[in-house]
Length: 402
Image (cartoon, rainbow, N blue to C red; front, side):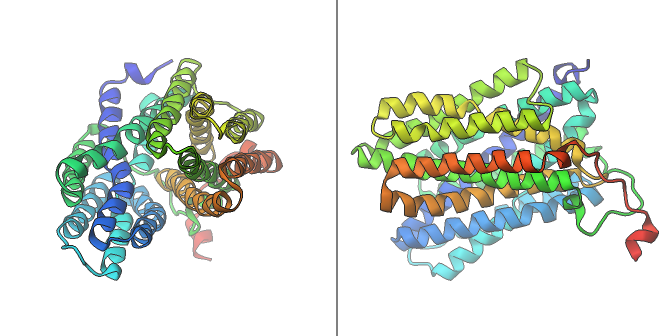
């Protein structure tokens, strides 16, 4: 079995990809605090951050589809450069800048952000080739990604406090361009070519029933994340210790890191639709259990560590299944749709959880997160056959023209 550790340059490629994805985890909270500084309003800042999140989800599949046709290098370099320009502009605006301009720039940053996660996941199967090793590679990537979520938000907040909110965004822009260029310069990315097919379906990766199933599953999984983030903040606020929200979320990410490392050692995530359902049951149960722990910081810390341990294995399982279900020539786009589903689901989960927390308290918001996980379980069971079906064959040119 050829593991990723035995592949020349593979670990370096993954390390560079983590560095390139770090600024992407900085921008959501970075834009929020910068917009709050410029406008003096959390409501306005929320609109700015929301516009960025929606545009990020909308832009990723489009850029990924171009990468599937033209290769990664030009897409990564041009999108990172464009995003950096918009970041520099928004970072340079004075206090009192008009809200419509801030929203437009935040949306432009989201649309232009390079689809880095989709690109690395499209490369991984070709690096290791052996299916079992590929599963472990996806688990390793899901685990490594947790490092960006653990370090990105504190980094941008720290830079904002020591320097300025605009300066923090400038630093993120420089890191985005430099790290993305370093990734694009790696032989595995530079030499990667899309699958040689005569014609790709207009519906792209979503033509595959299995990919549609996994997108719906990740939409629900994203809602688990968004609802949990709001519930954690609401719970710590109710307990008079808002400052504890940050460490609790770090523990949550740390749990995912531990779960991911365990998944790597075991060869990757689950291999069947039944296995996926079991992983999702663990995800749902772990986050539902937080509703009983909402009255204690210590209890939440313990349960969050356990619940977090289900996150990376869930992602690893979905990524590996997506690799097998993706139509030829649409790999990057398929992985981008999964990222978009998580982003959209997280936004929806956060919005609904906010209303639930205000009306019924943080325990109910945690219950909502568990319910979203249960929905993911139901989808995986109801549509299990689509996950077992082979990826659709390429569409002949004549058929595509009809």
